[in-house]
Length: 418
Ligand SMILES: Cc1ncc(COP(=O)(O)O)c(C=O)c1O
Image 1 (spheres, rainbow, N blue to C red):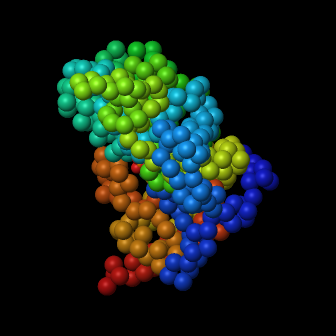
Image 2 (image 1 turned 60 degrees about the vertical axis):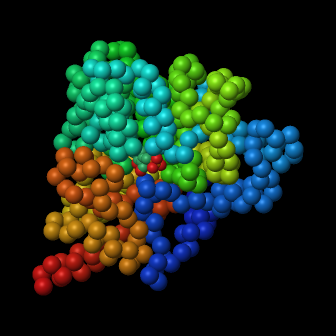
Image 3 (image 1 turned 90 degrees about the horizontal axis):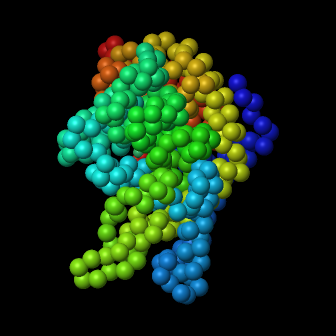
């Protein structure tokens, strides 16, 4: 196990998150739903308020001070994100509404341009609906076929199946780097090599990995990386698409309108340079600026330290939860093969009931299909309960989860017997 350096001081970190002071049902909030969305530190909240209070203006076309300040702050965040994921150029960072929109952008532009009838798109059974439905829509439109790689019994990617299924017919491989259900960390760099060997491109859904692991696009070897800022301390409404400039240059625009043009006539338009070609209309200025504070926060902690903390918490949680009678924990055995996400069920108990009862103890977990209905079918369940961890979670909170689940088992077991 990686050691957590002293600078990762959990008490100091927790003080930065005002919401962690909240009480739910008279109990201290235990927030174990960061895979859905993370909590926000005061610095992110302040960045939002400061923008609106001090320099609210539209960006790019203004010559007045407020607009120049807002433009500098907005474009500065592009550079922060470039550094955070090790992208060669800031113009390769495209702001979208979320990871979902980033995937739809690729499907609607690069996809329609490059994927034809009879071509194949390789996905995994782990994919969030965001990285499945856009490809289904594209495949239906152009007559392409979706092929699924296989998983091992404990929910890891079977690389042999990728070797077998990625062929000269494959035009795109699109997969998550970390499952939001099983926590599985997927060896996307190895898959990218297989894809490239067959002339296919590789899209990595980093919605769960970029917030939790050190991620560098060069090491991933992928052609597209997408993620959402709201899962990594930032506000809602900001997603990121990264792709090398040559690929982005070759793609048609996604939406037409202001800012994505360099000149317009009655009958035609010349499109803007990167990255603005893909950012039509007034963007989410305030939330992009506040996303910069989120990046600063994570960069200051160090993503190696973030990962080390989550390995420690996940290992502890797996050990504790395995003690609960009747529990089934899904996904890889080892915390080294998974992120801070644990999905589970109890024999005879509905996950929704479980979620409601543990909420009475102040414990916030997520229940349901987690936007992965095909995976739920493969697992032969309608849903699971899911606890997910981030930088502010403690072992005491894992203990609180354990106690709340023990209590829920008693309450629900009792109801079931009547
Ligand atoms: C693996 C994965 N991909 C994509 C998404 C979609 O993210 P968003 O809803 O922010 O677009 C999620 C959200 O939970 C996710 O977990």
